[in-house]
Every structure is written in structure tokens, then in C-alpha cells.
Image (cartoon, rainbow, N blue to C red; front, side, top):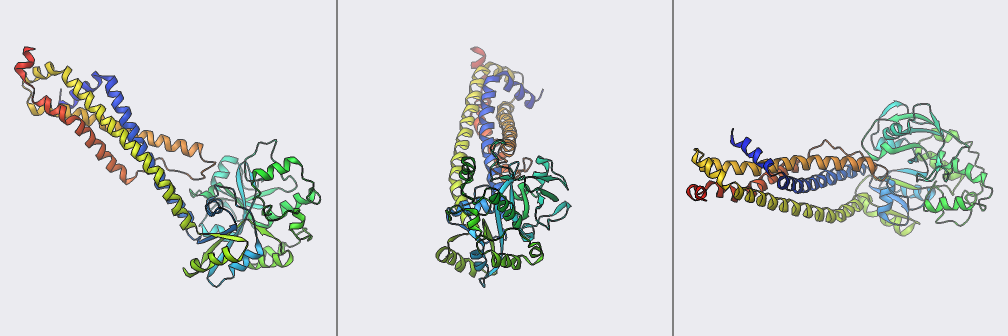
Length: 460
């Protein structure tokens, strides 16, 4: 029987002590591994989703909330903004393009977003089947939406009022107009997998019909008011924060029959210009802006914040602030994990030291039978290595299980797919550090084992 086999048997000769050491080591390794994977993957996905978006225009409020709701789709919007005012900013000489977003409805908890084809191009989304929506009340759905909702090409559905997944008995469904699925996007691992995209006109029209069904807008019942409160007055592209009058008044009393389908065949910006020429009070939720040069980042946000009723938020700055704040919490958790690993090292040391005391006579007999001091040293050292290696493997399994739970249970709040099979480069260093800790914990008992006094131990 070689030293490795003897070490393995010695470990399981004291199961309780070994299991305690393994549990502590696995817990520490698992926490560090989970933090590495989670922080890296989230930062990578967050940085990927802000590419091509230099600035977001929205209602005044929290800049971070505006970025989270408009770029990452994981928060409620800060309100609504006049389309006319947003388009005026988009005509600035440094602005390359502005992509409007209009919110208001959802389906089975998935957000319905009114925008145009430039939004799809900005995120390089590819269709798995079907085609892009061209007419009102046509939609393209993300891969996750298709998977969870069961929607297929040609299927129709009714949207629910609001951006939250309200209980069926409380949600108001727009049964006056159905949406038709025209396309399904390939999975991209981004927030767009969880979205239902349509054009802005569909969002406007569905809520104009909703407003007309309620008369002049002043007779909303308590249930509707509750919905508006839950949505924080940020839904369906009509600002409740800036207007105390009805939705009909917000549209300026125009005829909303929308015999304007030909407008949709115009270039996007020309279409929106024609819309506000007919109805100056039209509103959207936010505008994603891309600049021609870095000069725009310096000039335009100041203009928006000082000369309009809107606010400008820069995704790169806000996300850096967010990760700075998260970094403190991650460092604290990492420190706790390192402390747990050190405690596990002490546990391994105590376990091996006590085992050596109990096996002193056995060690003496091994020396009598021809075992060298080096062999006894190696025997105990292998025990520390085996414990640390198994603890590391268990910790890796634990971290992947934790990542899977976060992906499964947190998918509604965090619409990102996290890879549980990825390997972080720093986990290689974590492996070496764990093995080193096992060797260090076993070093003193191993040295004592190699110095066993044969005559003294046999005499006892």
C-alpha cells in the first residue's frame, strides 16, 4: 500500500474532523468562486449592453434608475418626456442618432417596448425565425420570452397594463387590440432576450383606445389608480408626473384614429417629426442617444439638464458608480470567505495534529518496519493535500450551484443568463492557494511525524 492510499484511509479514520475541515474549506472556496464569476459576468454583460449608448434622456429623477430601466430593463422608468423636446436635442450637431423607447405594458411579466429597427441594429440582434415587425401591433420577441411564454410565429396575445407581473385578477388586459408575433430573436444572453419589441405607434394607440374607453379620463376607479401607483406613474408613454389632466388632454384633444400608417414607411426620425407636427403633445419614456464625437458628451448633457424638463444620464459614468458601490460589498464578502478558508486551515491543522498524537505508536511501528522519516513526512503531507483538493472541488461545485440558483430564481429581477460552466482565470490561482493552505496546515504535523522517537514511543 503506497503513501497516497494510507493517507486516504487515515483521513476517513477520523470522519467528523475531516468533514468539518472539508465543509469550512468548501464554503470559503465556494463564496470566493461565486463572487468571481458573478461580478465578472455581470460587469461583462453590463458593459456589453451600454456599447453604442452614450447618453439616455428621460424624466428627471435618479440617473441610475433611468439607466437601469432604459438600458438594462431592470427597474421602473423615472417618468415620461415630450417627444418634441427629445427630438430637438437629437438635432444637435454632435448627436448621431436618438432611439426612442416607449413603455407601458407587459405580457406574462415580460416588458413590451415600443421602438424602431435601429434598436435591433444597435444591439446586433439576429432573428432565429420570422421577420422584423413592420406594422402596428406586430411584435418580435426575445428567445427567453418565446421559451417561457410558448409564443410562436403567428400567435396573438393581449398585453396587460403596467410593467409588473400583477395577479391575473388585478391586471387590466387590453383586449381591444391583439398583438401578433412576426419574429423571434436568437438568444444573445442580454436583457433583450426578455423583451417584446413593437413600434412606438402601437404603444400610443393601445393606450389611446384605453383612454377613450374611460371617457374623459377623470373617472378612473380605485383599481386603475392602484395600477398607476404600482407603476409609479411611469407607464405607457403618458406622463402622470407632469400632467394633472386626463390622457385625452395630454394628447391635445386630437383625433386618435391614426389613419397615419403611411408615416411608418418614412425614415424613423422623419416619421417622429411628422407625428409631433400632428400631435405636439406626444410622449415617450426615454431616448437612447449616440454621439458623433466625444464633444457631445461634454455639451449635450448640460443642455438637457439645464434647458429642458428632461434629465441626461451617461451609462458609463453611472455604471462605474454602481460597480464602485458593489465592489465594497463584494470585497467584504471576499474577506469573510478568506477568513473562513483560514479557519478551515486551522481546522485541518488541529485535525492532523490530534491524529498524529493518536497514531504515534503506529508511526513508531512503521519506522521499525522500515519506513523512512521522509515517507512519514510525505504521508501526513498527502493528508493535507487530499483534504484541500477535495475541499476545492466541493467549493467549485457549491459556487456553480449557487450561480444556477441565482439564474433560476432571480431571472425576473435580473434578466441575464449566467454561465455556470465558465472558468474564471483567478480560480486557477484559488486552486494553488487552497493546496498551499493544505500543505501549510499539514507541515508542522508532517515534520513531527518524521521526527518520531521510535524507542520512546515503543516504550510508552
